[in-house]
Amino acid sequence: MNTVLIVQARMTSTRLPGKVLLPLGGKPMLTRLVERLRRVQRADAIVIATTTNTTDDAIAELCAKLGVPCHRGSELDVLSRYADAARLHGADAVVRITSDCPLIDPALIDQVIAVYQEGDSDCVSNMLPPTWPYGMAVEVFSAAALQQAHAEARQPAEREHVTPFLYANPQRYRLHNVTSPTDLSGQRWTVDTPEDYELVQRLFDAVFAHHPEFTLADLLTAMQAHPDWLAINQHIRQKPATESQAPQETHP
Image (cartoon, rainbow, N blue to C red):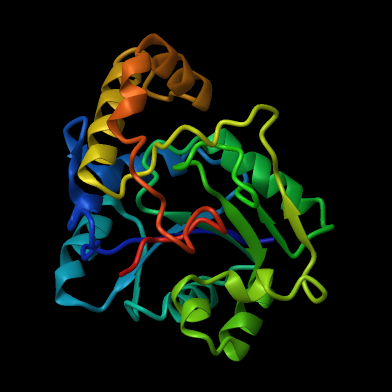
């Protein structure tokens, strides 16, 4: 089974433009994410799926420097972007990650992939409902289901957010959720606003120096040591049709 991590990324985020290339510990945030994804044991490849917009040339250039394949497609039809990237890279299973999750734990990604590889599900998520921190969202689904969604989805939200078609058809697709033993959904480690970025910078700096291959547990320990950090972005509301339904790239 060829399992491909596909990361959607673009420069035209509405609440924090250019966020994917903002510095995190001296390197672009997307670089830090790729470094963490390279530690995933159960995936065979990483592909960055960006747009054909000239504004995203910088993302393609960074991918070339990192030696990571870059697929370019529609900005708003992210479903087609994913379907084409999966087809061109021979994916049997797709792991969907968004570029605003630079702290994501590779072990958690492996955990969700392992559940999918048991063979009892067509789509496995860890955010239905959310029990993990925002910024730890993972989806794994079959390439066949992705291509079916691409062929049949008609609603704009289904095209823009990739997986709603699968969740809207539970009689057709076997769905599974991976739940955290403790509800951690009160933690927000995704980067969608300047406040989010400030918190993620603080977390990264706190853990990276001591443990470059830091885990979810390390991040929780840092938050416990700095309880005041929770207030930095607690007022930020997650955009509709994003991780509360499934891990989504934030679009206008």
